[in-house]
Length: 388
Image 1: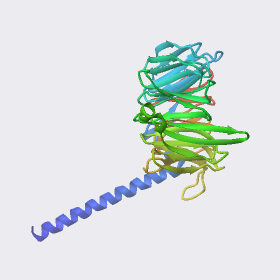
Image 2: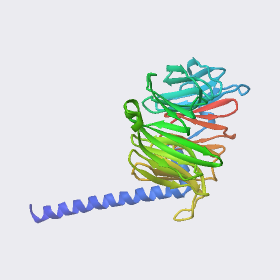
Image 3: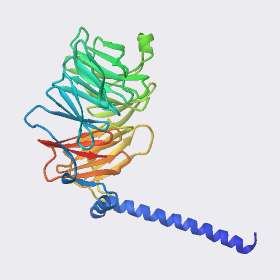
Image 4: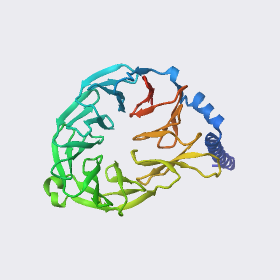
């Protein structure tokens, strides 16, 4: 290689480095401006990302505001429960199926394509996938809470039996796998890991005026073969700390929400994830490997009122999303998404900290339901459908 060829190669390499550097600077500048500049962010969302939608441009489902209607979203369906009939609508607002269910006051949960529906303080429970009932049961005692994982395995907490509580576990075709009997504590919440190897149960013991919460991780194999040794890890909270909910993040991490903090419990470890402060408006653990915290932000490089911190639970990087307005009316979460109701606007944000959709309305939004690929904006007499 002669001198000229060497010079040409060096110049080409230098040019590539400069181009990469300039592209990086432009990307950083665009992201920074997108975060800090309301007008620029609105322009990008509307004209480039096409993420802004309005009520007038979307399909809707009419509902009877004079009857007792319960609305939920799962997978790609909007479900409307009224007069013991569950009506399922697709993302275009077309009625796909009607299912007769003996449910008046529902308990609901979903994960992926599975949707579990039960009578609150009743006996009936249904597992639904797509448009069909996979199985149904009538249980002894009164159902107080239900949970389903992405594989369709269901845990059911039963109250008012000979025991303080019972936790029943079913597989995805309705086989009764086992029951956890609690003699002295009340089961408050439960969830099954994604790989169906573990179940976490949050319990409360009442002794006079003292509340004592605990969390137990059970091996689902051992509980069927060696129940005395089925508890493989436990976390005992301080007196007065109240367990509120549990959610498995992946196959090994149970995220447990107490009234003042969030604890991570695995089969062999315990770790404090977050201490809830007076500045936190909303905290939610029902996301895929993330905890969402909405709080008032301090002024720094950019000035804003409120932000969403997506705090990672599995060792990945954390993300942040800045809210333009004051504290939200409420939030709804589903796996990798969060819906933030801002009154006449709803922002749908993924756990990577990016806006997926922004919905605007002329009237105040009553509530929001959120599935995997569809959301419903609920008003008194209709549900506006958003494809995500």
